[in-house]
Each structure stands twice: as C-alpha cells, then as structure tokens.
Amino acid sequence: MKNIGVICEYNPFHNGHTKQLTMMKEQGNTVCLMSGSYVQRGEPALLDKYVRARAAVFCGADLVLELPLTYALRSAEGFAAGGVEILSALGCVNALCFGSETGDAEAVWSAAETLLTEEFSVKLRSVLASGVSFPAARQNALEQLGGDGCLLEQPNDILAVEYCKAILQQNSPLRPMVLHRDGSYHDSADRENPSATVLRERESWEGFIPAAALELFSASVKYRISAGERAYLAILRALPERAFEALPFGTEGLWRKVMNACRTEATLEGILAAAKSKRYTRTRLMRMLLCAFLGISEDTLRSKAPYVRVLALNETGQRILHTARRTSSIPIINAGQTPPDSAYAELERRAADLYGLFADRGTPMPPNSEARARVIPIKER
Image (tube, rainbow, N blue to C red):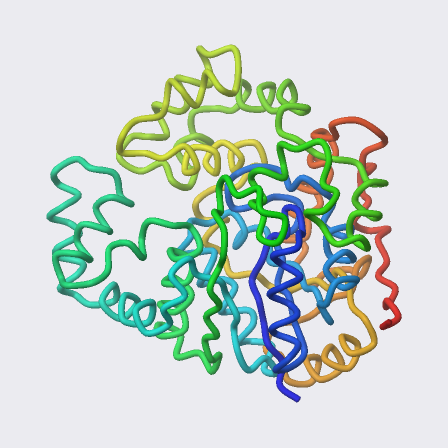
C-alpha cells in the first residue's frame, strides 16, 4: 500500500483535517509532517506539538513527524519546499496531499510552472518596482502572463502552488493530490470545515473538533503570544544591532525599521504597527520578530535540516517508520534521542524552552522537556 504525505500545522486539529485524513486513508497510509512548537504565521503553536500529534493519530494519521523549526518559520515558498524536501527524502512516500480553495489541480500545476519561468521573474521585478507588496506583485505578474491570479489570493491555493513548484524544482517523486478545501480559511464557523483562525479565538470547540482530539485538548495547556509578551519584549529590547541586521525577512532596510520599533514601542502590537507598511505584510513581520526572539539568523533559517523527529505513530506508523529507516536519506530520530547535529539540537532546545513562557494558564512544559519526551505507539482502533 502506498504512503501519502501531508504537510500541516494542526493549530488546532479540527473536523476539516479529519475529513482530509479520511480521504487519504481511502488510498493509502498517512504520513504527516507537522510544525512543532512554532507555526508559519510567526506565533507559538496553540497546543504542544506532542498533544497535536497524538490527536492527529487518534483521528486518522499513521505517522507524525516534526517539520524542523527552520522550515516551519520560512515564507510560504520555503515552508512548502522544506516539507517536500523531507517527504521526498524519506524514500517511501508516494504522494503529497494538500487542500486548495479552487480545487483545480490543472490550474494549480500550470500556475506553478509559470512561476518558475524567467519570463515571470522579469515581470515580477517590473511590478515590484511600482512599490506594491510582494503578494500583490506576484498576483499581478501571473495575470499578465495569462495565469489565474486568484490562485495567489487564498492561503491554501498559495500553498498548493508552492507545493507544486517545489515538486517541479526538486524533481520530486511525490505525486500531487489536490483536494477541494471547503469553507473559509480565515472566518468559517462551519462545523464540518471550520477555520483554525476562528477556533483559536473560541472558548468552546465542541462540535468543531473530533471527540478524541477534544478530550485531549481540553486537558492541555494553551500557549498564546500574549501570555509571553513581557518575555518577548525583554529579548527584543536587549538585542544588539548586529542581531537585527542578521535577521531573515529584513531586506531593503526593514531590519533597521524593526529594530527602531523594538526600542521605542511599549507593546508587541505597537512594534508591528510602527514597522508595518503596504509593502510588508504583518505575517512577515511576525516571523521576523519570532526569529529575533528565538535567535534565528538568515543563515540559520536557510540551513538544511540535519534530521527529522518522530512525534506520534500507531502500529501502521511503526511499519512505515521501519521502512523509512532503510530508505531515508535524512536521519530520523525518536523523541528523547540525542540528535546527530549538536548545533541544530541546541537551537531546538532553546526554542522549546522559550515556548513554555507562552503558557496561557496551567502548568507549562518545563525547561529541557525535549530530552525527556517519549513516544509510545498508539493502538489502532
């Protein structure tokens, strides 16, 4: 039976994710590559990565691996490329499943091909010179070349295009599987296809999240950026100029604008408001600030992940893992195992320890919890 991969965050896991996993399991086993303690929008994950991974296995995943930190915090292009790189490197994953608001596989693939042409690069530079934001410039350039600019408007469509781009660029053996994503990514309150953005703001998740996951989540600590704001600001205010200059996403002098905001504004929202402009999105600034908080430079963010970590699995997942250990070109480590790269492991240890500072209420993860973590296979029902 083939193994089908999905690159995900599950922040939080909800009914829409169960629907996707159910569709995937009709065609094969499911391998999830999931962001860990921090997510691509530049925030701490709402729930601990081991809790989210177990919830996924309870609801249809067979094996959950961690998308390395330096891949999880990249732009959409880097996030997709990193995920495709790792799933391809496992050597036993046959397909990549992802959602799309349009659900038009042919249009998504065609857009990806266009974005990789030299003609598109020339057109993009021309549009950027007019002063518009990068997302708007990409959409405009694609439309001028006859592509469907709407594919660069909605978040799942954007990622779908980036996944296909990565598959093409890397000559990956992964076969794209495009599923239509019902509901709105940002504001859907539909119980079958809820928005994770909406759920993060809700007190009650009943009806929106599968019962097995809800029971687990209800007993778990929530992590929010607001809860750790003072710790966040303390680190940002103490950073030297050279650290800001080395940050990712800080080109065209943006790093200096962010540095000045960190040294003059009293709140995180104040920093974002002072640094934001039509050219730079809030999400880019959030990722930049989080990298500053975690001590991640441009060089570090671009570094190749030296290993991938197991977060959760069932008995089928154990068999997939056994195969992957024979076929993978990237080391796979168990929770609590000493990683093969000490510098990268130290980055992860520091990031995991700082994650505990964002606990909203309850007892947070203690320092050095990564070294004490253990993954026990979950029995299949």
